[in-house]
Each structure stands twice: as structure tokens, then as C-alpha cells.
Length: 347
Image: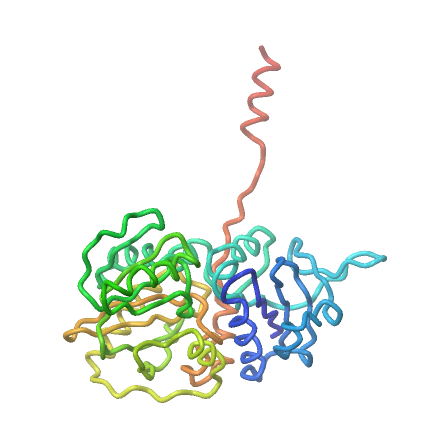
């Protein structure tokens, strides 16, 4: 199977997407990969696999070495003097973190141009990209979430909080713009930092030493669930630590927890995934408080697709690629207009 990895994007997480793409290149062994880079101007470039090094992008050398592409019906094309040459692949894989990849833009383009792809569909992207929508979605399914306060950039800051709290931009991942606030004196600065990245933020209680567990997976003809990992915790993983975390390509160890807790985490994951995330490999991060499972966040395009949590990542890719949701073919027959024209003719 030939997979086109789509990465980059016009996003604060642009560099992390590059790291993920390079990692996937090293991880996938059984499938052929093409690499299509989306630069900050949202231009597409075909990148040779042997050139997949971070410096190619930071130095903008991709402008010389890469081949510029256009997205058209059924795929990507190189435009030349003698017509368009299609880039042949079996399926595209959306590996753009943050804006463009996780907010539904790329999914919309792929749906519109009829390109088969692995990744969250439009509705799944919209819900998981926004932390408020994620909480409301989880709560509608009976999955618990941490209490929160939604704050707009224009709101007064005269609210009372019980400290410590954690402040997160509403539509960002990778811990960008995230701060732990331990007193009222630190609040204004932390809000200013978060509002640099988004006009709305979520404030949650920060619970030191909380148990956190990560589970990835997908549904094809049956459930394909990864091991459950307990990430190594400091106070929280900042951008730099998560940047390095996205480059992981070695399988991690499964956490040793009771079967009953494992089953509850898996059931929460299955409920969240449902039919909404069909066609995507996602990772959910859970908290456990007083033996109750809470959803922390949905990662619709996790770093390096959480390859390190699976025994056979190549097989997972193949299973998803061969069990994708399909769009209904709507036949346009102009019956309504034709009937009106006939009626006018009789009149």
C-alpha cells in the first residue's frame, strides 16, 4: 500500500507535524510512503523521502528541492508544460497537528475533491479541536470531564478561583500557551500568554499528582485498541517536552492496573470514538480521580499517530485504510427543475 503523508500546515504546531512525519518515515516498514508538505502559505510540495530532515524545512530548502503540487479531483498533481501528472498513492494520511489538520479544513478539502484519507472527518475535527465542544460531547455520552470556566479575551477578570488552576487556549494542543497558576498574582500574566494564541481559554483546577492514562485506537470491522500508557509526569508536559514526545518511535511499556479500571478506560474510549471518529486513529487522555474515569482530551491526530502504543502499527494503518467511511453518492437528476419547465410549457 502506498500512503501519502500530509504534514506541516499553517499552525502553531507546524514544527511538531514535521517531527511526526519524520518519525512515521522511520516507523512504517511494510508500506511505501510519499511525503506532501503544506507550508505556512498553504502551498503543497512533494518531498523526496531521502530529503525528510528538519533542516530542509527550517532553511526553506524545500522550495528548491520539492515539487509544487495542486490538489484537484481525486488527488495531487504536478502541473507541467505538457499537462498534469498525478501523484500516485492509495490513500492520504492527515498528519497536520492543530489548525488546518485538526480543525476540519483538510478533511473538507479531501471530502470535496474525493480523496481517500486516514484522519478525523469534518464533524469529529470540529468537536475535538475545541476543548469546550469536547467536554460537552463527552458529557452527552456520560463520560465525566473536569470542571471548567470558559473565559473570553474581553471578559472582566474579577472572578474568584481556587488555586492552583491550569489555563489552556481553547483551540490548541501540545501545551502551547498553557500555564499552571498557583496564586492570584500570577493570573493576569498567564491569561495574557494564553490570549496570545486564542481569544478564548479554559480554566480548570490543577490537581497535583493526578493519575493519567493514555489509550489509542480505532474501529474497523472490530476494535483495535493499543496498550494503556501512564505517561511520565512532571508538573505537566510543556511544549519542549511534548515536542520531543512527538518523536517517539519505540514501543512503551503497558501500565499495570486492575482489569476493572482498564475495562472502564476502554469503554470510555469506545464511547468517545463511536461512529464519529471512523476512519481515524485517535488517542484519548484520561484522568482517574477517586477511582472515577474522566476524559482530559481527545487527540484526533496524535503525535506520530501514537505508533509507540501499538504492537503492529503497520497493520493498524492497513486496517483503517481498508475500512474507511464513504460519502453517499447523491444523484443530481434535475427532476424538480424539469417538472417546473414542463409545467410552464403547458401554461
